[in-house]
Length: 261
Image 1 (cartoon, one colour):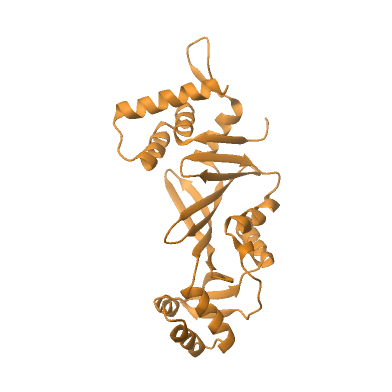
Image 2: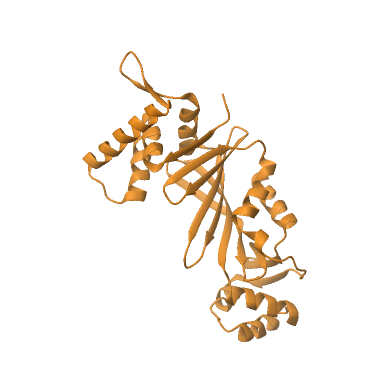
């Protein structure tokens, strides 16, 4: 089988899912993007998409008047409905919410991007070693400056309270009270108040049906000049977070740990 590399519209992916037997999954995809649709509207979209797939030699009728997907597209459609697990990168701000998902199936790795909200691009990777660099670029971490700072731990409840402060000077003073150095507290306070977006990296498991479990991962804070990694852990039954300066090396280590877990 050739390497997977498809760029399809939402309607075309929905049609591919339907022809693979994942009819409800295909409908849900349409409802997610287009809202409530009548049965006639769904059928019209799927029929139009089927014609498009035929024109691209990705769908063909058999002598028994059945429709058969190209083998690579059939594999890709089944993958979206039944992959082993995924790694999901997300970045969110007041203006944008963007996602990048890496799917894993039988020691094969697939990058799934959504372009302009309507085009799904699924590309097979050569190696999972590519994934940290892909995530680094997606999260725009190359736009921030490297810096040195000690890692710092806080109780999660206190961290949530501190995030409500929008005055960098007051926030800096509060961080100093937690034991953070004056210099590092000033940097973190500036980045919290002037954040460009918040990101996350999560491992998503699929135990069965529509259920998804995403309880392993970490957060990214992208400030005006610097970026931080925020990870969650429990110690002595207390919920804690760990703040660390983000670097390409640290991101790679943490991403590879998620892939190995």
